Amino acid sequence: MNFHSSQKKRGWKVVKVFEEKRSAADNERPGLSDALELARARKVDVFLVRKFDRVAKSVSMLVNTLEEFNSIEVEFVSLKDKIDTTTPVGKMSFSVIAAMVEMEKDIMSERIKAGIESRRSNGHQIGRPSKGEALKDDILGLRSRKYSLSEIGRMLNIHTSTVSSVIKKHGEPKETQTAF
Image (tube, rainbow, N blue to C red; front, side, top):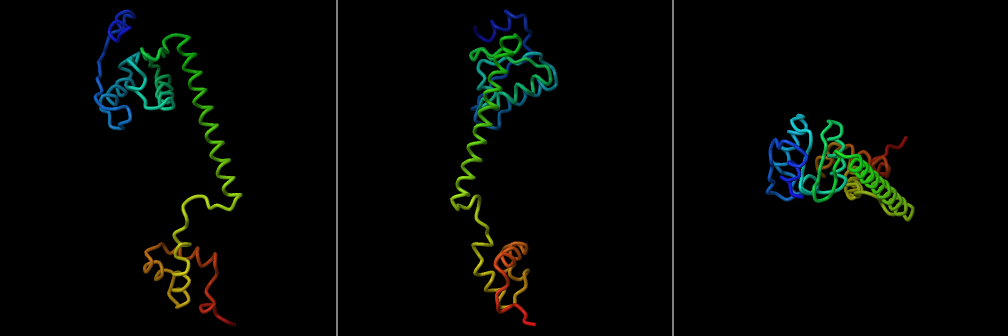
């Protein structure tokens, strides 16, 4: 069933047809943006597309869009993908897809957390190394020559708090400590 015969068969009035010339991977899609604005303004009851990838570049993005449509009471029909939230079976299909996407996100999150914990337990640093740690010798050397935290920060082009953190972690160089 093609686009025009589908809307005629159902008795739907076409408010506007948008033909997007850009890829679904492109974030700047004026046709899609205009169509979504019509839906958000409730100037349409059904958002009809040939294929869901014209609306979203991933299933999770499609789920988010369809959840937004549901909240503003706009139905969604994708002719090629056989998603039709105007019918009970279509709504159920969408619910199953949404549940699968949620499960996939949860599994991915668990795997990432387990991987991070495994690396941490094996002594690997997680995240970007501290800029201060890379400059530890320079910071401590300058501090031993009696430079202030702000002077060291300016000289090394780092924030004073970074200088302070390194000194707290490694202690004041012996030469700058005052004897009592």
